[in-house]
Picture 1 (cartoon, helix red, strand yellow):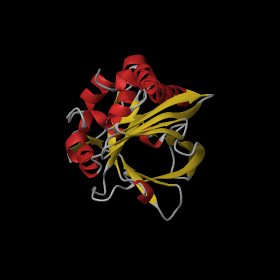
Picture 2 (cartoon, one colour):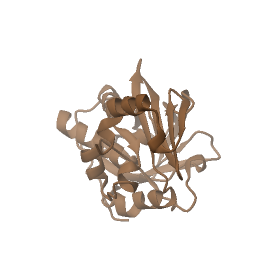
Picture 3 (cartoon, one colour):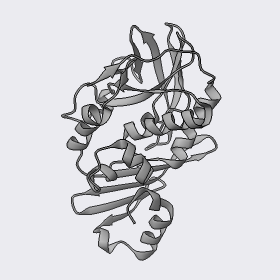
Picture 4 (cartoon, helix red, strand yellow):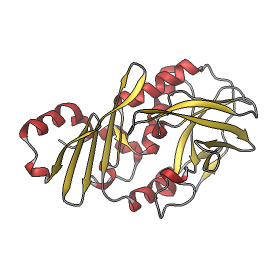
Length: 248
């Protein structure tokens, strides 16, 4: 893994802007492994550009681009572990990324769009704090507790299962992190979210499991079977709402 120091500096950024960036991501960018697995892309920058989707790297990259383009704010993709409930067997300990945004030379935000943060972590002291996140599969608000330690941020849903965000930029996330997840989860999936009353909501969940194509809409399975036998009405619906995430 290639790491380099973050440039700590004062930037014109606040919590409302960070929420705007998160919510824009949830409304427009899908968490998807189809570009990597079905379209053979190895660059999350290309998955984001070509298919408006990707893994944790692509989601963080979107927010990084959004902040730079709209507010001239610099942000950094940082490596992370994950709690055991999200750990994919066979992946390394550091198997995830998030986005760090300096506020001043000594304070910063962290956002993790793959964990569906509803607000940023604000790191400005060494006390315990809590933010809100959403479990998009159950639509249940889930508090995340965090504390700044030396060179890392300790987080947990429950104290016995922590994970850690590191405070250095990773410059090769696709080759050092993303490839392991794709290798261990070779069946592609897509989660398309929308924003409803400032809450992130899972609208569509598409999965391929062996020869079965599965469509979940509004948390209910509406189709499971061969892709070429999907009802025409459903094919039409998916083309309308998910066209920008797939090859035409």
